Amino acid sequence: MTATTVDAVTGCLLVDGRRVFPLGLSDPPPPGSTAPGGRDAWEEIASAGVRLIRNYTVWTEAAVDEQMIAVAQELDAAPQHGLQLWLALAGADANLGQQALLDRIVNTFKGHPGLGVWKGFDEPAHARVPATGCVAVYHHLRSVDPDHPVVIVEAPRGPAPGPHAPDTPLTAAAVRPYAPACDIHGVDIYPIPPGKHAGGPPVNTDLSVVGDMTRIIVSATARKGIWTTLQIAWTGTEPPHPVVFPTLQQARFMAYDAIVAGARGLVFFGGHITSTLSPADRRRGWNWTYWKNVQRPLLVELTDAAHAPALTAPLSAHQIRASAADIGLSAREAGGFLYLIAVRKSATSTGTVRFTGLPCGIASGTVLAHGESNPAREIAVTGGAFTDPSPYAPHNARVYRFAVVGSGGAGVTGMG
Image (cartoon, rainbow, N blue to C red; front, side, top):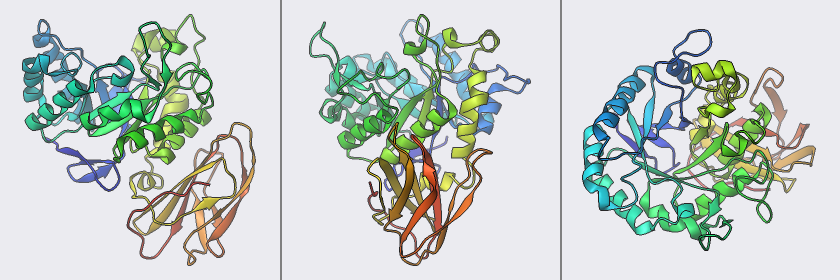
């Protein structure tokens, strides 16, 4: 068994005591399938940094025997590639009315090394599922299995006030009752095409709605275990809608926007949606075209030796600020380095940005490389401040690294 818990300092996962920023696919390529070129599909996704794969089985008493065989096969295969399952309990997760079924699932799989985390009721606030039932399931589940956290993901919309009324904007008040029903609270938000998934005005229709929704969950949860689910595809990009996917720049911005807002894990949804696939990808059962062009390059960046420590580092006590109001910041410290993650949330603003509040002993830093066209570069720091000479275009994201003496501790992030 691989024990998993939530790190109280950062909100990252602790897998056998090691701090991990989980990157997941929901859903992954079919087990046993191959990527273009013939490599095992799960071997390929793991090689780019994927660690969690979702299995969304909707359990029933009538089919549970067959369902368990299928899930066991995935659980057996996952550790062979360094993967773990995010295993749904759908059908037994709304209340304890299906406790016997819940117990059978949990007791069967809780000791399996392929299990990473459990998935609680999907989007409960939007579905108007009573929170008391979800909380009861959570407490019972953790009494049966204390070694694997429970994750609940909310929709980016609140509950409709009536059966025929439109959805309401997502609020912290709407999702707060579900925070006691999980160890990790999350939100899914797919802003392409604009204004469809979370709704239109007064809800932000820019890509930066990702950070807005993540902050709502942070505010509602008052804990640090936060995940954001981002799009590959979703129902709003299925025919008859135009089939459209995020570009690498868009996907990269959304990932860092969520991280700056407080996400300590990212999941990417929709690579399995058949109607959005090219004929070649449809034959393989997954969106390998998007993987090659966008998903793989992004995950390789997030998990490389330079960037990965920034994602798992505790927040810094230094109050770093930016000269532009549309720059979102998260400052972290670990391993003798201060990391500064910065995103330009505006879709229109551009220009250079000055940052202040760094420790006065720092004289230089590095802008970490991303992609062939953006190699690492050095920047000078004077008196705890620096101006990045490369202008920030709309939806730019950058990670800075500074060597410091006596780093450590946790604090709050700066926001310009």
